[in-house]
Length: 455
Ligand code: CA
Image 1: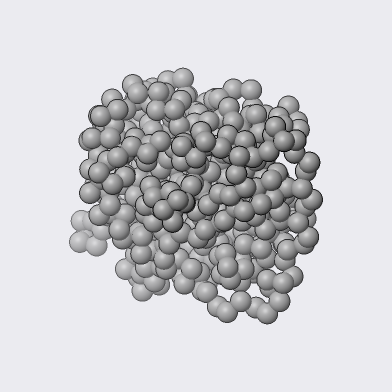
Image 2: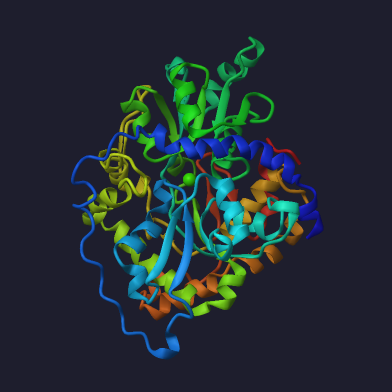
């Protein structure tokens, strides 16, 4: 894969990633970060679930694992598996769930590994596990094989717009506002839009949305990586026009009078792939039973997280000072799928448009479809993040990284109903709000169908 790893400059990636690194550090602060209300932590965790009797043959090779996470709703299954005792239930009694300062740190720490004080794996945006495996974003472009094991969540993200653009028709379909947005560039004040980390999910969501509205994200607007805290602060002072963000911000933007919501990612691509659980391949190869035990704990946590009656306790657990350190109240509404959109758009109250962890309208959330890995690779080619010939190698890379086989084994072993275990590694044709379709059997046709692209 020399093409794959060689043609993307790590230095260039890190230069942009550096800014977002600071952002993640500040993310906590930008959520408001008030002192934790008394009693919040103590009222949360009920007694852990009892351990299952694992036979000696099935006992995990180790009881320890160190998993990195970023304090956002995507991390909830890892936090809950630890806090509610689902890891311990399967013999993983010493799992450390370790807060990472930012995505760059998570990458650095997985390169180090837990033996050196880093991490064995954890939560990732896409396609970071593939980029790390292929040495695209690692030190000295050293390949560090990783295995993708489960998807953590779908949806829960959105695109926020500053109030100075109220009344300009900026919504899910951007075409009515295209001339206005593009026109800002001619007057010397180009529309500035931000994501917090380059070449991963949020960068893709905002690019897709612009391009669907006939706006070239590289030419018609200024698209840049900005620390999360700065995006909010800059929007308040009017120097940032838009940013791509995750819960609870899509809910808070309007209630905190920061701006309004153009769209939720659930509207752009219903049940889209979001963040994933992945581990170092050497750790998994050495500890196959422990890996499945982790997967079982995460799957149970995901099922628990999606029960409506558990959502209040879920908000209380993840909001604790030791985890996200936000008031539980800011998570309550987005966890019910309640969003104020602003700009005369109707409010949303539909849990199927919010963060989901186990089941969605397309089936199983947790199962890591290879067809979704392929979309991320294809979209990376679309925007010139990876060379065009990546598509010829994509399936080889995906087959090395994606271990849906382990997910299946773990699911069967804990008695997940056959109907909840996908029968194919492809979810089939994906449909976007603007009518475009991604057929995993023909990614080139998808690329050909798109008007705005870098290839
Ligand atoms: Ca996200």
